[in-house]
Amino acid sequence: MAIKKPTGTKDLLFGEAQSWRDFQNLAFEHFAKFGYIECYLPTFEQTELFVRGMGVTTDVVNKEMFHVLSSQNLRTAMEAGSLDALKVKNRLSLRPEGTAGVVRCVIENNLVLQGAAPVKLAYAGSMFRAERPQSGRFREFYQLGVECIGSDSVFMEAECIIMLAQFLEDFGIKPEITCILINSIGCEKCRDVYRKKLVVFLKSQESKFCEECYRRAETNPLRVFDCKKLRCVAVMKDAPTIDQYICEDCRKKFEQLKKLLKLGAVQYVEAPHLVRGLDYYTANVFEVQVDSESTGLGAQNAIGGGGAYAHLVKDLGGSDLPGFGFALGYERCVLALGEVKVHATDASTEKYYVACVDENLREHAFEYALKLRTEGKIVEIDSQGRSLKSQFKQADKFGANFVVILGPEELADGQCRLHNMQTHEETLISL
Ligand code: AMP
Image (cartoon, rainbow, N blue to C red; front, side, top):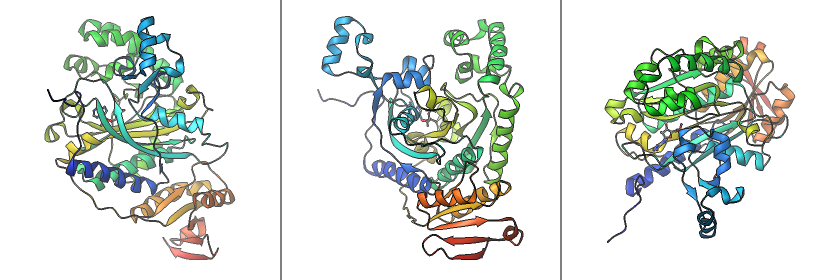
């Protein structure tokens, strides 16, 4: 009998193969305009990385991981009757998502130096989850994503979401069928208070939940929001939401995110029930959903999502560095598109750094950088509140051809200075 492909996998052939390559090229070229550089990381990592990264109580870690065993390790585990008999470095799993691997790579290669700019990495490749296959849900699926590590600036977060929204439109997913949901799930301080309130609510309703959510109410109460079963969704409609409990800091960050998304012309919907499925997220999170009916995606209508993670780098053994990122599922994007499209891409090589003379002009720098990127330029801005001199140093490291300098007087006349990094000539140009 002929051998068939494993359940939940697929062959990408002809137009589909080209479309996956275009999807990556289009994304990497677009993300490069925001300073993201591509990386290719192992498809399997130490199991411990995912357990510590995503949290032992998440479904992905608990039920959906594929483990990787060499013949020798398989024998050792079978003789002992447990995978725990293996040395930690021999306990390996296929990656179910990309963030933990990127963080591991950043720590291992010491990519973020003290006081330096955040590192911005983009990845694409197969992810593996032992889920029950259905439309838009596979066991091996393709994701692309980015991680910005080393900055907790909301400017970086907003930039990331704007970049994604623009990419989806460029890829051909109509904004009319797309909805960007945003929420703040609070930090460790405010989430604890909220979690207690939620547990009281869940206990009062426990007879109404599915068996799994009954268990989740004990182990990881926020995850009950992720359940797609109608009976659980109905009960959770009345659950307390975190927006009533977030602290002042988290509220400010959330308000600023909304303001910046508006500047970037990104339409969003506030979704207080949005918690995301993995444990490492803190504060601002988001998800991109598409219309479930017209795309035929049903309950699997989330095409991508992400958020901030304040402690993941530290939890995985690195220094105390915050991060922000997202992952996008290729198959669901194609389903949202309604057809396989082949795109022609156009590479740009001009690099710009938008510097500002003082902190008050940061929003202008952010907005101007967005404008330049829509013109196809590769643009970076400062996210660490640096002096003008340090911004120039950063621009040099970034390999900028030009630095755009925004100063209050020039701005008042609708102008800025353009500094040529090769000739060091400066000219006044209109914004
Ligand atoms: P997550 O890491 O769960 O936030 O997933 C990010 C994106 O990856 C989702 O929005 C989907 O587009 C995609 N994705 C996640 N799991 C699967 C799966 N089993 N099959 C296909 N796509 C998936």
